[in-house]
Length: 154
Image 1 (cartoon, rainbow, N blue to C red):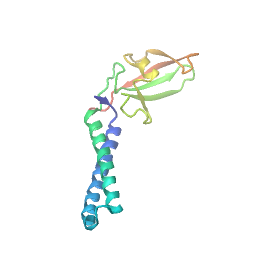
Image 2: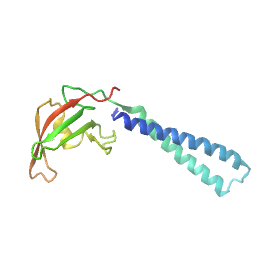
Image 3: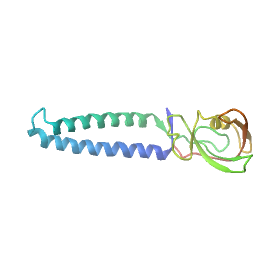
């Protein structure tokens, strides 16, 4: 199981749909190119592109079959929670959605469960303060959980 956001799932499904359309067009082009000889470069290019697209479609479909949008919890921070934290040093607030490492952690507003901040937040409640070592491990940043929202329903 891979936890992700609804947006990431919709984007992946749109990519699968686009690839499927392109594969259908290639099939039509290959039918038209059937008059071409086996060694013809146009036909070879179409076949190569078809294989490449089919491989990508299978990969994305497999990822989608394993993906789930968690419901999250409004009581404790868990996978799928939308958490607002305040940096106690700067007062700056930010909202994050906790996703699994394969759940598109590069998408803006999401954070992978493997990230130190996510690890520190997991299991904590509203109002709790957590401490996270900076990357250079020379100092700790302190955050307070100001909001725990539920993720989108799966």
